[in-house]
Image (tube, rainbow, N blue to C red; front, side, top):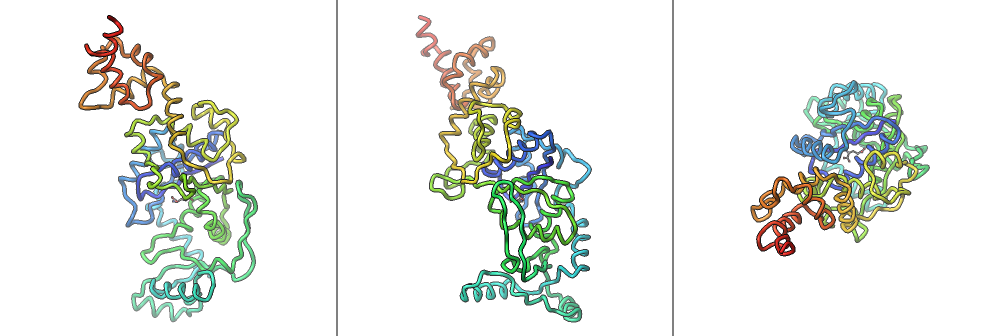
Length: 389
Ligand code: GLU
């Protein structure tokens, strides 16, 4: 089994993205397979190096190391889509030669008007096919005039396209509803549908676990792969994580980025134990390490219903993670933070650190709690002195 996480580095990753990464990591590890990381940075305007670095740091902090991908390498790279242009180019040429792809010179404005008209007539929005019938001469003339062109994939006006989703069962779509879609933007970069599908095939990914918001993209990707004779992975579209009001999780629900959680003092084991259960059922409700979670993970146990994010649950697992951490790493965790310019080691004698950790562990939630305890226990006015009297 080979799974992958394919984030776009356009911002800091949130709990919803991390859960997708985790499920892919767990699936790969449940089968002694390979977990691949691919950076989908084709949108040059929005992709930033700092976000790529940050997301790799986040994954490593969580223990979700990839077996193949940037900085790990492998035989099927490069693993940054921005470095794969030559490869995509060859496939564009093939599709053009097969006459399943054609240049489209329609302006954004014209497309907007067309969509409005369709909407007004009660039709679903799809490309009207304006540029489909252009002759070779017309195409050449437009190119000569320097009119920018996208490349569209031609979809038949009849028939159906179907696949079996590992979570949602059989999915069937009418081709006539899909419409010819863009596979290359006018700046020459590949569209998501295209590079994502091609790369999964070329990188030999066998299972794609991704958010169900991508479900309707899959038939388009299947059409591209079929046209190129490439193998399609099995898809498992996972339910979205929602906030208390049932809408997809966002900052409004207090959902934090991984970086914020780390800075706040959450332990990676807490985040992992919480997220693993958000949309996947485990028989064992006790705290587990990642490898044990992987051994008990199975795609069949992924739920169809939206998974609800609850901070209290995360806090529960934070406490569990604290109870299961070893003394030394817990000391390290608490001794990094400062409160009012004070750290635990300002109070705790060097030969009492482990004893201190054992004494207060049960009462901790966040690392700064330890500073209060240290102050109470080891200053003259503190509890330690009082009880010692
Ligand atoms: N780059 C896409 C995203 O971040 C990947 C989707 C997928 O997993 O196929 O949404």
